[in-house]
Image (tube, rainbow, N blue to C red; front, side, top):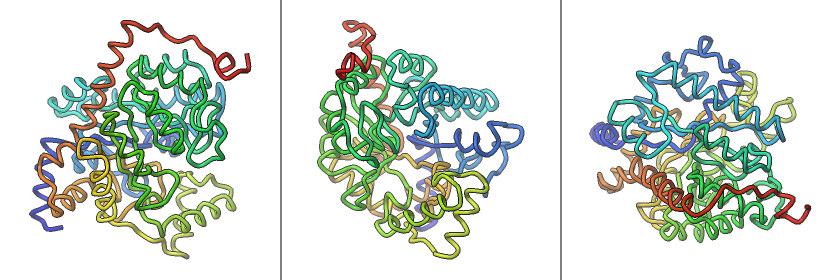
Length: 398
C-alpha cells in the first residue's frame, strides 16, 4: 500500500465512513473494569488493553458502530436476560459520557443524521438468541431498548435454532424459531445469521420477509470454518436483499489459523480460562502461548481476498464490514484495531475497486438494509399483531 492509496482511502472514508457490524467493547469493559468509564477512559489511548477507543475509531474512519450487547451462552434464562440489559445500559452510559463523539441511533435516518453532525452513530446488536430466553415479549422489550439486530445463536444451540459450532438438533429452525424470525421482521429488528449453522442460515432466509445480515462472517470457500458463509448462501443475498459483513478473526479467514487457534483455546481451558476471555489475565495466557508457538498471521490482503470472493458471489450491493474487535484475542496484521480500516480500503483501491464500490461496502449497503427492514416492519405492523406464541405451543411441548 502506497501513501497515496492510504490518503485516498482516508478521503473516501470521510465521505462514506465505515459501518462496523460488530464490536465487543461492552463485554470487554465488563471484564476489564465492570463498566467503569472512570477507570478506563475511552477518550484516551487504550492500546494494549483494548482494540477500541474514541481516537482510534476516528482514525479508522468509523461512522457507525453496532455495539454488541453479547453475553456468553453459559449464561441462561433470567441470568442471560439480565446480563444483556447490563450490556445495553453500558452502551447508553458510553454514549451519554461522550455526546460530542457518539450519538445513539435507532434508524437508518438516525445514522445519516449522526454522520452529518460529525458523530459516530451508536447502535445495538444482541449476540445470541439465549438473550431472549425463548420469550417473544423479551424480544420486543430488547427492541424497545434499542436493539436493532439479534444474532440467532452464539457458539451453542438455542432450543429453537442450531449454531454453527454445536451438534445440530433443530435441523435449522424449529417452528418457534420461524416465529422468532417473523416477529423480528414485524418489529424491524435485523435477523443476524453470523454464528448459525448453514441449515439455520437457509431456513431463516427462506422465511424472512426482510433482508438479513451477517454481522461478522467471512467466506467459507476461502476458509473452511463452520462460522463462515457457504457460497450457496451468499448467492441468495441478491434476492433477499441482505448484506454479509466480512470479519477479521484469524481462524475465520486463514485456514492455517484454525488448528493453531484450537490449540490456543485448549491451552486457555487448561489454565482455567474461557477461550474468549479477553481480561488482562486471559490475554496474558494467550500471549504466552503465542510466544512459544507463533501463530499463522493473516494480512490485510487476506481480508481483501475474502471480500473479492464475497463480491463475486453476492455482488457489490451485499457486502460490508464487521471487524469483531474486542471480541478476539488475535487480530489480522494491518487490522490490529479499529484504526486500521484505511489499510483495508487502500488494499481494495489497489485491486481496482472504484470509489463507489468502496462507498457501498463501507456505508451505503448497511444503511440500505436497515432502512429496508424498517419498511418491511411498517407494512407488517399494519396487518399483524405482536405474537404471543410460546415455544411449548409451537414446538409440541404444550
